[in-house]
Length: 178
Image (cartoon, rainbow, N blue to C red; front, side, top):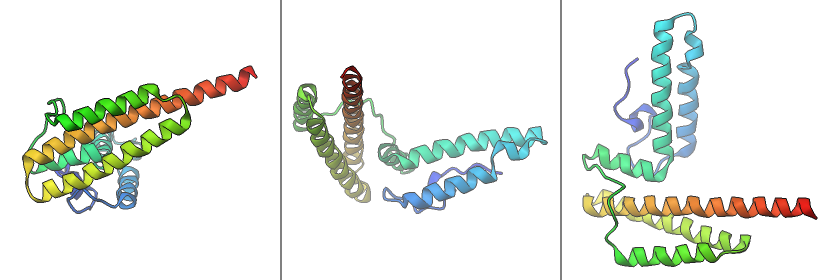
């Protein structure tokens, strides 16, 4: 079995930012069943190939299933690689991030965290739409900047979720004390 060079081709999906998540998941499960290493237990050489293939499938699925990774991958396919560690030069964006960070630091209730999470999720959706426009227009510099912003906001969203989990854990602990 040959490894596919293109994750979209591997899963039988059109190349693009928007994709059918159900089709992706379905094809992933189908390929995992077909090439699961346990199916080749009596053929060590084939089993080793299946382990490598399974690992490639997992990587491809993770990349396509994550909007930031998918956008970065699209840029790679377009020969416009991106470094997510490059700083963001948009001062308005950075100022907005400072304000959001302050809101997170000051949030004391689940409602405040929920409101902030919804705002950030909406922001990520807007950035995704902006990326599609930049990508379609082959405005590679803007596309890279937009992906960096998506990456930044996705990390911030993860911070919000950690705060939500911590608040929930604290509430569970308080319930035990009562």
